[in-house]
Image 1 (cartoon, rainbow, N blue to C red):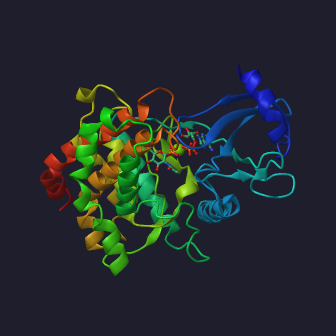
Image 2 (cartoon, helix red, strand yellow):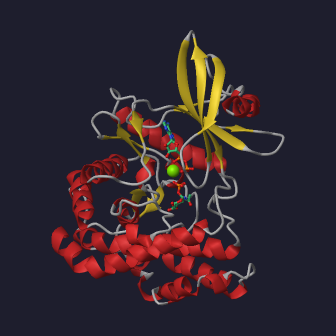
Image 3 (cartoon, rainbow, N blue to C red):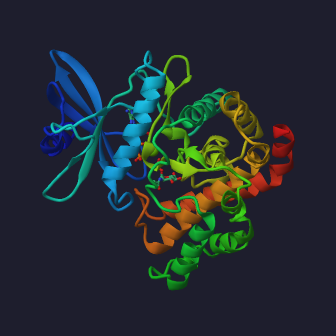
Length: 363
Ligand code: ADP
Ligand code: GN1
Ligand code: MG
């Protein structure tokens, strides 16, 4: 199987500066967007790993500008941590010195990263310590990018976290219902419709200056941070495709979404999907240990709310994709996007019930 994968990837891999012979390749990770592989290269007798990624061109139309963002970020982080090779992703250029290679035959775009060894990602959190470490790493990432030179990053996906626009898209897709699936998810549709009024709370404040624009990651789910296999410490924030101007609340909200329940995002048994206040407390402590110094009072005030905003937004996106026919998020089985939507809306309801306790803890 892995030799089959390798044979398919060899014509791509030969365009990169590998310094050895590729001997193995296998699909890697559980991201919903890009195609990721771990490649093994024999370098003078030593097996060395790389991450090869096919970039999703449907989601990221402007790959040169996207890769320029990633170059700017990784260079900045590497300059801040010259002693720690795992503190940031490291790109390997193609033979022409470009940070990605475009296949002239079909327009497919690929990039290669050094593999970060001795660390892993998890798809669901299993302890408060993990939540603390993940949040600490994401806070440090925001802090380190606060002085990124060269002006604002390119907006790789326009209006990525503009929740009201996500809501409008949902309404349009629902009206068309071209797959005839609305009848399968009336309860979720009703939940979405009942939550429109809070969608604008962050975008309105960004627009009128009550919240500052910052360099943010925008996709801070738990499997986008690598944790050290021995110490459990956050080692490196990965998946930099959506780094662009945003609110810290987008990042912290997505951390709450993915790090306060020890269940899979597509868990079918909702009795296993429980918002855990202890995980939330650990998350807040980890985040404030690195980001507490630069947050404004309004950003801090809205930290608990950001959880249900981002969880609602993500559930809405899963629901929209289910109604549209699963065209955006990678799925592995029928109904998976609807299952994902259900866990998210279930969590939103639990966060609503616990909001007073969350607020009290942040105070
Ligand atoms: P996607 O955009 O599809 O989510 P990611 O960039 O998050 O893709 O990569 C998918 C998975 O591959 C990650 O969750 C992580 O487990 C692994 N991964 C990505 N980059 C590296 C790296 N440089 N070193 C080791 N593992 C990595
Ligand atoms: C996608 O790429 P990945 O799997 O880390 C998505 C996020 C969603 C997430 C839901 C570019 O993240 O916005 O929150 O799935 N990324 C993009 O799991 O749309
Ligand atoms: Mg990812």
